[in-house]
Image 1 (cartoon, rainbow, N blue to C red):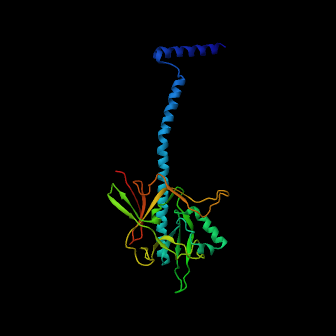
Image 2 (image 1 turned 120 degrees about the vertical axis):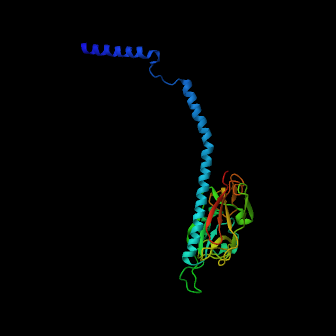
Image 3 (image 1 turned 45 degrees about the horizontal axis):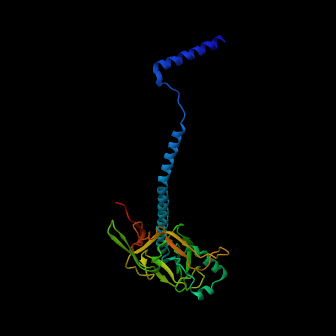
Length: 286
């Protein structure tokens, strides 16, 4: 007991000594007051509100980058396939309302009709690689075939509708450059949607000859660059109101924000006809 009293006395002396040295400034830490806590919460809320638009724009930028990268890579793949297979390779795109040929539609088997249904949500965004022959084919005995499955651009992106329907142009005010966007070439000579289906659908495409050059007719080099603008937005296929299943019908196509495929926010894939190489064009901030 005597020892404990001495320790307590010692502690009291140390505490008094510290108070004498530091005076009134020696205080124990205190907790936040309610007012201070509310101020901190308000500041955090303000910072969060300011950050939301930036995060949304970052997400849109990531979607653009992902779609652009995928299209660049797959255009490059079509070119490489043409050179490695020593044949013309077509990159075939899925247009809207592709089922309009009644004779073609009536010729399809149940499995082929299922394949058609599976492409309804790929309008303006889907594509596949096709060749009329392969390396080693005998003259007059060609084996037309698709390379792999139909692919699609990431959700929220698609190829601008004007590329399927008409011509347009994109003006870069910083570079003072005009990019002429022409309508895709079309052909009815490709079986669709599978290699054992009938021909008859008018399909948009770009193509590369065995030299890896961009070609319009499947053989000779194209005489102009190809420009493929990408758009942000949605392509919503027709849906049966009772079953909610996809059905043949006009799709609802909208860019968000409107006109972003041709505005200063454009993303454009350019293909050089001589080399067949694709590059990405976009407006660079000053």
